[in-house]
Amino acid sequence: MSKLLSLSEAISQFVHDGDTLYCAGFTHLIPFAAGHEMIRQSKRDLVLCRATPDIIYEQMVAAGCARKIVFSYSGNPGVGSLRVLRAEMEAGRLEYEEYSHFAMITRVTAGAAGLPFLPIRPVGTEDLVRANPQYRKVIDPYSGAELLSVPALNPDVAIVHAQRADANGNTQIWGIIGEQKEAAFAAKRVIVTAEEIVPESVIRSDPNRTIIPAFIVSAVCHVPHAAHPSYTQGCYDRDNAFYLEWDKISSDGEAVKRWLDEWVYGVKDRDEYWETLGAETHARLAVKPRWSEPVNYGEY
Image 1: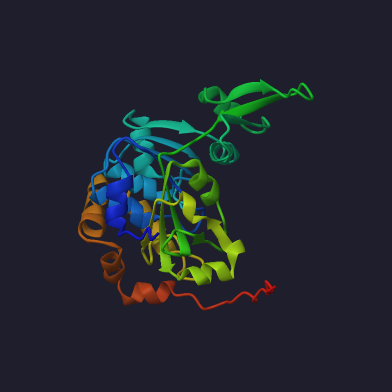
Image 2: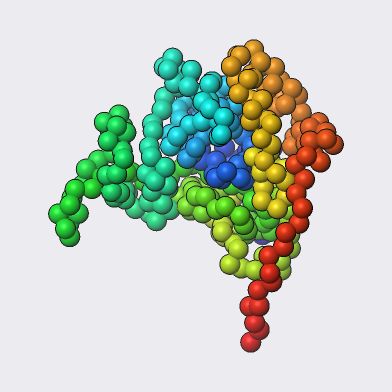
C-alpha cells in the first residue's frame, strides 16, 4: 500500500506538539526540509534528540519549536559553536541532556532492540557521568567488572532522509551510514524523505542497500534537495559556504529572525527553497557521477 504523502501532510499527521523527535543522518542526509516544515507548522514543546545536533536543531530552537535537547556534541560542524543553542541552554530556557557519541547511539540501539538499557564501558565519560544522572553503574554478571549503562531511547518520531525509496517506504541509503536504521526501528512513527521515488523493482534489484524496510515506515515523501546545506551522497555536495555564513547569522538574533522569515516562512516548500537558492548555487553544489560496480545476485 502506498505511503506517499507530501512533506506538509506527513509532518501534520505524524508530528505532534510535545513529541520526542529524532532527526537522523550523520554528515550527510540531514533532514533539513523536515525541520523547516516543522517550523512552518509551528510545532511546539518538542524534545529534539540527535547525535551532533547541527544547524537544523539550532534553527528549530530559534523558531521556538523545542523545550529540550538530548544530544552528543553540539556544534556548527567545522566552524564552531551553535550560538543560539548555547545561549538558550545557558539562559535556562532550553532543557538539555548530554551524552557521548557512543552512549547516544547505544540508547537508540537499545530502543531498536526492545531493551530497557544497554551497558557501555566507562571510557572518557567521567564528567558526563557526574553531570547526567541517566548514566547508571551496573556490574557485569560474568566478570564482576563495573560498567555504565544508558536507558533506551524510543522517540515518538524518527525522520530519515535517503537517496531513494519506493512508495511503500522501503528505503535505500549509501555513502556514510549513521544511526538511521537504529533510530527508525526505535521510533513509534517513521517519516522518510527521499531524493527519488523509484519502483519496487528497483529496490528489489539491490536489496542489501535497503536500510529501512517498509513495514516500519509511516510516511514517505518525495523531497529532492531535502538535506541542504548538508549533502546527499551522489546527488549534491555540502554547502560549506552556508555553514560559515550561519556562524555570522547566528551571532545576531535579529539576523536569525530575518533568515527564518526569508528561507523558511517565506517559501512554501523545498522546491521553492531550492529554486530561490539559484543557478549559481546549484552549479557549485553539483557532483560528477561515480558509479559503483554492478553486483550479480544470480537467478535460480
